[in-house]
Length: 277
Image 1 (spheres, one colour):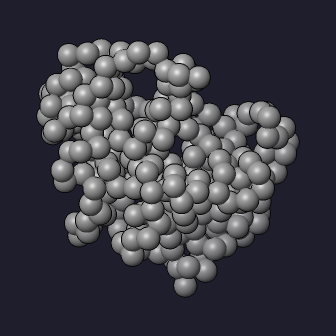
Image 2 (tube, one colour; image 1 turned 90 degrees about the vertical axis):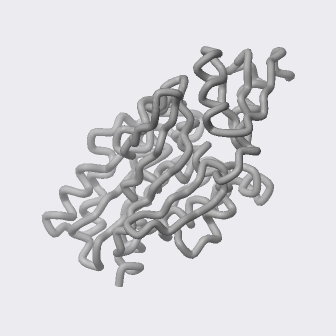
Image 3 (tube, one colour; image 1 turned 120 degrees about the vertical axis):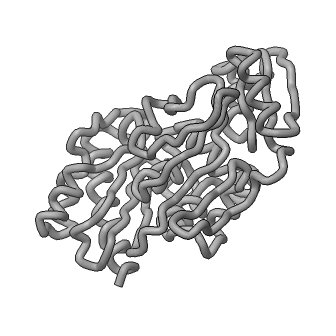
């Protein structure tokens, strides 16, 4: 299927792109296009204007800024998977995002803006406690990971905002990500997955996120509470879906996906604790 007719502008700067969004309500931003273009072909989205930010200089770098790692909006998933600056949970999630062609084109920031619950890197982003920088004609603001995702395919970005940077805190410790892909492997969309960060090998101070099973990648607050109380990863993982509405779909029942969430939370915690030590 072909998309409906639309206008296309390759912006030369963030300021130009922001102005185009301000002047054209309903316009969509494209970075890698790996999510936007398929949705337009299926006519799930039909914007009158596509603003391509892919040629804007300065948005394709990963920088160590002392207390955090700054990841530009045009940094590809392959760069995330290969960078020594990136925590292991996010590196692993990026490495398990699609095939080589997808990883060479798709951007990490685009995956967050797209807010697909079955994507890998947003789950790791939540577990690592990152923030995004959103810019519009009126200025910029930061949005914490915990408030970044609103619903399926809906982020906290306003229609006139551009995600220009993702910031990952340098918290030390260890982190990990694991999942089950839709075709049983690690390079397809997630049926269920989990990411964990721990401050040290005890695992008492941790952040754990679950993706693929509900409407958004979400913190597993019950797991974190249990770990803080001294529970083992296996026992804490029993609370993986506490507070999360598990959705049945073509890839599994509520019971099956709840079971998978527990399995991958345990695995992610155990691996993160091992990485921390």
